[in-house]
Image 1: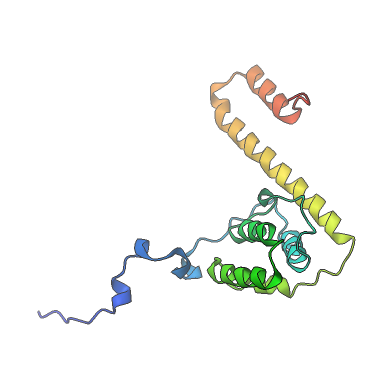
Image 2 (image 1 turned 120 degrees about the vertical axis):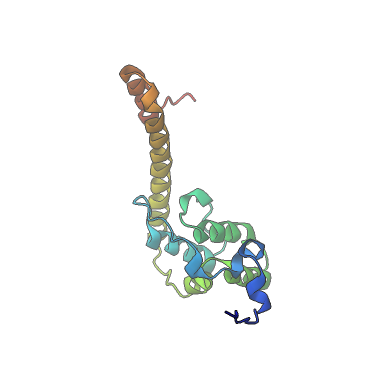
Length: 168
């Protein structure tokens, strides 16, 4: 039997590991894990508010945001708030092209952020959820170590997690 030889396009010969990460189609990426301790609409609202009013929200950190894109967008907005508007928009447009979901920053620009008192509630909620995620991570680590502990040791470790000393 004769094998039929088909020409291979040059881009198909390039290995996946040699490609740039933003060249991968979104369909090949894993979905974001759905964390019960996240509030995606609040995160989007906070990012949209920071986009429309640079420098107004300074009390949040990147740990207050979940997913792959939202912490990156927060860090960029936090770092670029004092740049001139033209340069800030140019850099954000470049970032928008390289996100896992391109166009996310453009979507945030169209989200309404006119509610005056809502941002304080959103910031408080995001901080609360970030603290709960940190506590849940510590609880998971404790649970993994519990197999080697006595009951009393496990109780004291749990008490230390739940009621930390204020002196430290």
